[in-house]
Image (cartoon, rainbow, N blue to C red; front, side):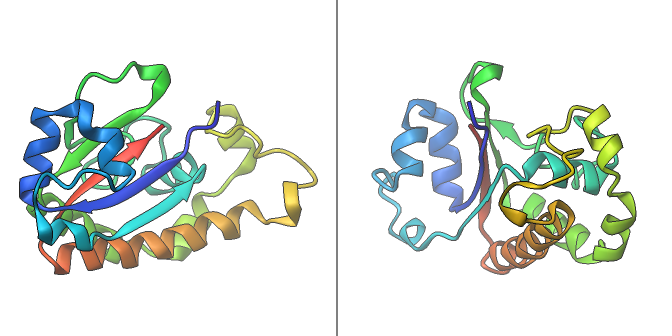
Length: 173
């Protein structure tokens, strides 16, 4: 089963509603539920696919730990419902947390992340999707350049969400 990551802006009303009605997560992600919040219909979304765990490692130097706010892809925020761990996670972050995250990502350089990239280490740490030591990458994609490209998109995305004063949903599933 693929584990893909989607990040989506939410209004404060939507963030609170998701926590109260976690069964609405799927309709919310499929844009079938906005909890009556018209402002939330103009949401921002970023799909980072399978890159989430590699980015977690590059941002924190760990598979599942790290210091807030840069550990946000796998930790922090508030859980949306009780999703079995083998089915992923859904967590929401309030607007002040998003602002802190955007600032931390802004201060993180591509060169610092480039220095942390070690395919053998990522493989040893069992970083998803676990194909870091393949000599011939699938589809002729350089794994490091793909991660760095997603990182730049992540910087832009979180800055835009923070600028709008919105909350954030991080869904891996």
